[in-house]
Image: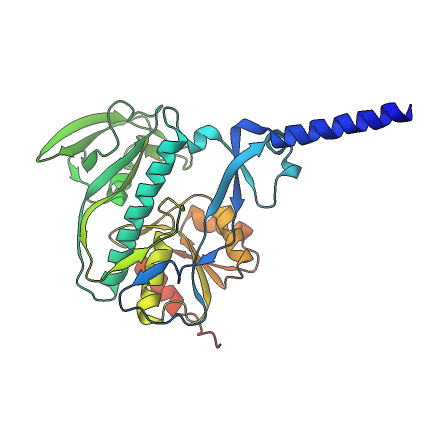
Length: 333
């Protein structure tokens, strides 16, 4: 009897271990990662030595969930959220497509952040916005089959689109289900594409066509700026990049404090929403950040729910972010 009981326990243990190690086929985990300083990853021509404090970026770790983690929330790591595969990779796409899209978005966000920061510091920056470049099209979205990656959207219903913010604003003038007329430029010619809209799964009542876009622009910088975050992708570190460039050149942005920041940045300096806010605020807390700058609106509301004693500062633009930091008492050190 004792041997049978022992054998049963061994089998149960082996089964549990196997289930734990076998990944779920359709679920992923978003996990917090400790915020990291940018000083050593951002190189700016003429930069000054880094004083105490610093600008920190935050990222989200994404990995497959085990079967047990998928079905038993108590077994998920602290701060984890379960995300279905289709939320990460739209139908018709692959993870390789997603990685390439994030790589492109990261590269463009670095260039735009440098342009915004240097322009704010008074440098002569050539930055002409040219429209919203399509990065990806969801396979089940109204835009599928009508728009392709690399298409350049320059108008909505005849109204000029110079930035992704313009595109979102003009589409938002419609109700979900209505159609929009998009002007798509190819070389010197522009064609009109009529595309339906659906309600955004993230924002109730907001119409979308189902594309991911980036800023298209001709940018010439007066200084050499090199940013290298390795395999980190996506546009959400744009605000942190711009703040760190100011810090590298002037040494005045962080006020001697650990400043964590997240938010995509547009060429006009506007700061737009990002994903994974819960994990990012937890990452900022783990790094001992003094403040956390986030896009205003839903991102800020979500951040405050998980911030604890960490001060959350909502911002709508890069200039507002600089003003908010300038009002902080300088930290002695």
